[in-house]
Length: 295
Image (cartoon, rainbow, N blue to C red):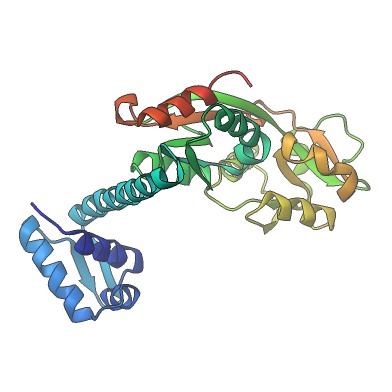
């Protein structure tokens, strides 16, 4: 079975857009040419790859499998091109690292700096994603190493402990809970919350905890960034829950108070996640080993 790179790229566009017409526009071609490529792919594969309907197209199970492999191929090709071009400027390897916001804000800068100091010719591409996205990208081979919080076992990945963080409840200094030494989560549910979006490990933990208490979570607003969340809390829009390391440096400047969250789930284990060791490049393995060493 053979597929050229342009056809794979086109199929990824169709999967992303859910429409042959929109995919053709994205790829700067015409829909008829894309339909012809698709028909040839389905003939070679011996099975349908798309389900056609009035609103566009969706993937069959075979199409889902093909697009996952196509994304890996294109990611590997991109890394190969970048790695080879890097030799001109003295770079001797490239690592794709993705991490959740907690890891990037609290721990990774210092750890990466120590690694780069030892290996100055290596290039590290760092991207910030939710833990859910980190897991998927590492599983799909789109990243070498991930840093995330897992709310359930990750059987498909190699997981090693990285760092721990502790959640705090932050609020304006004049808030009724501001003088508490520590807070149970149930104590916060009488007040409006500002939170992160669904798909983040923190949001999922908070929603699960609210469900277990039997009381509704008054989620007044959601924002995608820790900075935005702190600013909304500082403006009196609600209380928020974030890792201590992402809050404590800003308390005086932003007029906030932080109180430790007294719950078992408030202490979180961040993980280094990879595929099996034999699938990693030597330099990716070096970075993974470096990150799991005590900070």
